Amino acid sequence: MLFNSIDFAIFLPIVFVLYWFVINKNLKWQNTFIVVASYVFYGWWDWRFLSLITFSIVVDYFMGILLGKEGTPRKRKALLWVSIIVNLGFLGFFKYYNFFVDNFIAAFSFFGKDIKANSLNIILPVGISFYTFQTLSYTIDVYKKKLEPTKDFIAFAAFVSFFPNLVAGPIERATNLLPQFYKKRTFDYAKAVDGMRQMLWGLFKKIVIADNCAELANHIFNNSAYMNGSTLVLGAVFFAFQIYGDFSGYSDIAIGTARLFGFDLMRNFNYPYFSRDIAEFWRRWHISLSTWFRDYLYIPLGGSRGGTWMKIRNTFIIFIVSGFWHGANWTFIAWGALNAIYFLPLLLANKNRTNLETVAQGKFLPSFKEFVSILFTFGLTVFAWIFFRAESMGHAISYISGIFSSSLFSMPQDGPGKATLTVILLGIFVLIEWFGREDQFAIQKLGLKWKRPIRYAMYYAIIVAIIWFGGASQQFIYFQF
Image 1 (cartoon, rainbow, N blue to C red):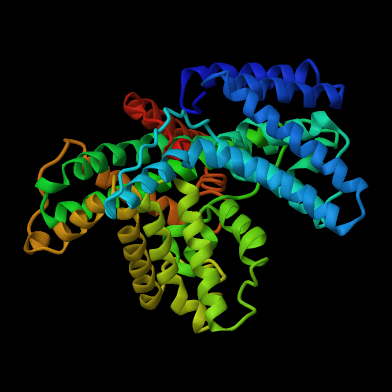
Image 2: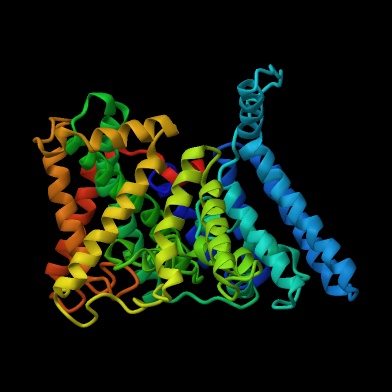
């Protein structure tokens, strides 16, 4: 079920009314209802996927209980590895089986050996990369004794399958979300209104910004061989805003929806395109995944505590694994490796934690140095996105070659008719994001001090824009991951 669909527009009010006004007296029934609603939401795509998430819930629930009872370090580690192998085994099969088979065949063909191996027509279960990491974080935290194992199966099932963040995050930690299912929840009007405001902004980012940029980015990338350099640059910029509007928009809707039901999800995006260096960008982009890899992979590998070689090794591992997490394609690995190259000079010079505060905090405009740093970081990010968006390594290389040609300084070619309108929308969007950059989301406080008619006029304008551009609605990008 898509957040930007009629189905969800019907589903959400029904679930909301039943949750708060029918079964609000009993916490157990509320949690059970969340599980049922989440299964309906997830099964809307394909009911067969429900067996996988159920299996993951059962395995990690009992692994947690066994870890809580077991005191022998060797046996505890064995139990942890059972959880890791089972979860990553399912993820690896559904997501990477064909990638490894095809590359295995290609490797032997390179040396003149023909290997016969069949690829499978595997359907990637929606959200498997997200809920797999969520359940793994629970087992690992129980193993490390950062969390007591739960004996409440319904609460654990609700934690794993919670529909707002089930399909595309944020990837929640059990230490944050699971305890919220133990506590009695009462309706908080201010929290619900704030959640609806964040949902509205998320829908705007997805439908008005991302989907309009998608039409142009798809046109340019799909016809890149016939485009001049300046048009290819625009295509990369449009994709940069497409993926940001699409994914951060989903996160805003997810967080806002959770707030309607009394839950607080972790922040997933923090205005990443206003970053002054790549290290800051990765602290602000897909925060739930970046911190997951930091805590469960980078730090266990030794983090930045070792010598220069260990720092380089760990940095490349974390970024390449992050790239591979996104998809079974060499382009994602190249994207991850390129970001590691961007990041390394800052790490080795101990400047990776220089920009920790919001840019130009408390000021109207950034300094000239900050402005240049933002543009430079954005440029590096846009260049890396080319590999992320390209169909293959060959496509990425030909796209980049087209940019760095004599046609780079020529006028962009005509594309779909929305190009000028989309550029104007992007300008308005960037301004709103800039002025709201110190808040959790851009319109959190926008207009709160205005007179009610003016404030509501702004909300209605956003709603009208969403409806106006809603006809070209596209699937969320991160559903494929």
